[in-house]
Image (cartoon, rainbow, N blue to C red; front, side):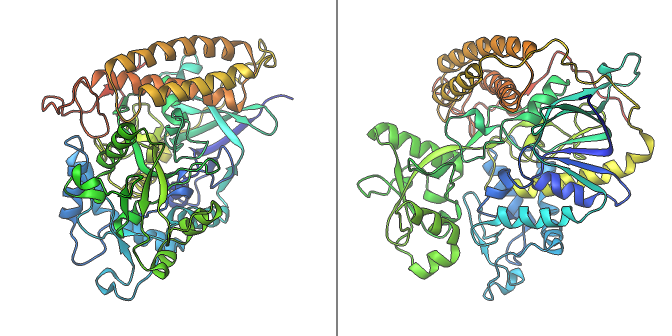
Length: 542
């Protein structure tokens, strides 16, 4: 079977809030392709429980949200970016309402337009609008329904991008530009060629580099790795956020216990029932996630305990079930009644605060290539993401990207052709166990050596292992036909190396990066950690 050319104006890689909201904002006369690795809504957005932070209450203010975000970011947020995103919050919530998202209402919240708002770690006010405890699912399913009804959008589910196509693939092309992507159809095993005017990376984060994560299996850093290989800079990859509270149960997989429980009074407890967070921070359970996660990690190691506990059983049972129906039902499946029992929890990798560097229009270093959502480094999060700012960032930067793409649409055409993916010198894989073993080894040493608490010795050990894995993966990649697992392993190794390099460069402890070798904050290191690939070249103005 010969490969095909697929032609669209805009190619969006990823189908979470960032990707789908961008597809919906583009004009109807623009041909859009949305590529999803699995089903359309199988991404991190769907599993976001808490909500979206925005100033909706008359008693709250833009300035307060800005200051809370800056404080949580530990001195590394870009203040202009923070203000721009926060100011666009209310309008983006209204946009979601217009699409049909049904947020939880509460008649007592008159000053917030009748929408129930919760408070999460780092926030000084109740400003998190939500749909019970399944906000991500409500957003994902609503946007899916909307995008499936758009005639100008073509959906490619069960497809995974292999690499970006750039002008380097065409001899004599005079501008360094992204031209499309090579994409594997997981059903046929064929690598197809997608040619477009613009490409948007909305592939999510890279948290599957860790053994324990709250993220779904698709979070393998694909967009970050592809952009790096294409010559784009990445920043702040050392700041990997660990969510303090994931359900600890041998049969539970990646199930997050929302921070909103702590916002409604849930307490963190040691196995003997003692509360411990007030010893670590005056904000106790409402301290930012990095502080809470380190406290839990410290206590688990000190006691040799496999888990700690989160208890909301002191609140009325009706209140708990009404506000947290999804968590209540899921825990009951494992024999835990959260209205009576404490919930066993452990920290788990949750959010990638760094990513592909973009400007305020979501442009990367490579002309024609944009990034939005968890794939991108915008400057919003700094050294630590404040709870529920992530979906807000997705919406705001996808809005900016859509506006910029529309303005540039008439000035660029997709190339007529590029070389197809060459499989003439490869064979079928002979030992898939190599991929499986390397995947498992990588995630284990990243958890052990590049986790919540780090040392230079651990980081150097991890670097040696990623370098060895890289050699094996290149050999395998060069000789055998690509498949989903090999593509993801290649990207995981690339991103792991970026995380380790970034962590070694930051010789201080700040936000999510905590190292025993440099336990104090260094005021001279107040800029982002920027990694520059060998193939980088400054972008020409458009």
